[in-house]
Length: 468
Image 1 (tube, rainbow, N blue to C red):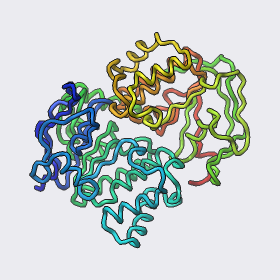
Image 2 (cartoon, one colour):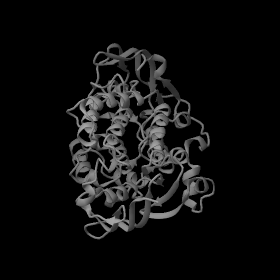
Image 3 (tube, rainbow, N blue to C red):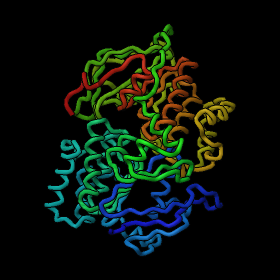
Image 4 (cartoon, rainbow, N blue to C red):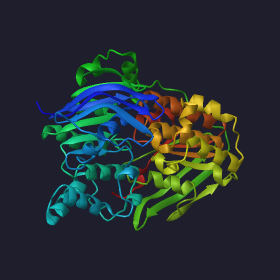
């Protein structure tokens, strides 16, 4: 049996000595799928970064990492990147070049890293784009794509260097069901073709379909490990049982309060376009204060663009959005599905929150309550955006938005980075806070069970969209 990667008592600490990931020993072998399940902030991504030799400078790893039986230091492991060892980061913004169109990004990886000829690289690039449903978007730049599209492009780039050992960090987050299944099938091919796959996810369905071995982590500690089929049907830890049972399909239905509040805004005959491409046409809806509206539809169909239009960031192609209540500009907010894009990367989160509070004269006394409700440690705010998990950063973004006491909040896939337990707790808090402040909430999600659970009305943009 060929062992590609082996760790011996690998742990992650801050430079001050605080342990973030307790010692973990694992093997990743040829033909193997290994999946790490766990809550947001449990140390899954930090463990993967430690294996890659890609931890932020504020953190350090201890223990041994072996490649094909030989211990390699961080620099030696970095020399393996691309051609032998590759990682799909959690955020597409961390792996895509904003100055290059997506065709060239994939093509250059195939040519310079994968060793393909120029003609073969171009042909394989088009094949990859077609396989991922992006055949018409080769000339687009990352900022012109939806979050789900960018995730698929990052997937294609990461796997174009020919590496047999792959670490995929939340590879299906933000994808609709159709494209999620496309990505899962491509992940399955890695082990089937003699490679090895380490997947980090909180999606039980992804873990089940990939099979192989599963490790369950919580608060930086390995709780249990075993065969996927056995662990998912008969977990030994209480936490694993809670995690598996917490999928939105298992949530108990809840009554929705009747809306007696004033009308907030109306969209009439609304059509939106990006460049020459019309996203959707003739959409009509009304939003009342305190109402929860659900938006569904495939990736790239225009859900995020509708949020931009509501926030005054995108001018409609046709139709109009009219406001029935006078609002301040900072009271109509959008929570982005890519949280790192909403924070300066190198500045402590506490400093960023202080700047917002002082600039807009917000109520600082709400901070402790919101931190507690969102299950965020006050100490976490001393770190920068680069040094917290994607799920933790998304909850900080929600906290910041709630400080503004918004009248409309557009939540764009805001829980796609959260484990099922934290997801429900976060959405319960978000919807309750919006109800208390009579703030209209628009939730974008690919999970219909989640949308049905919270929303008063649901709009499927596929009914108003041109074919993508």
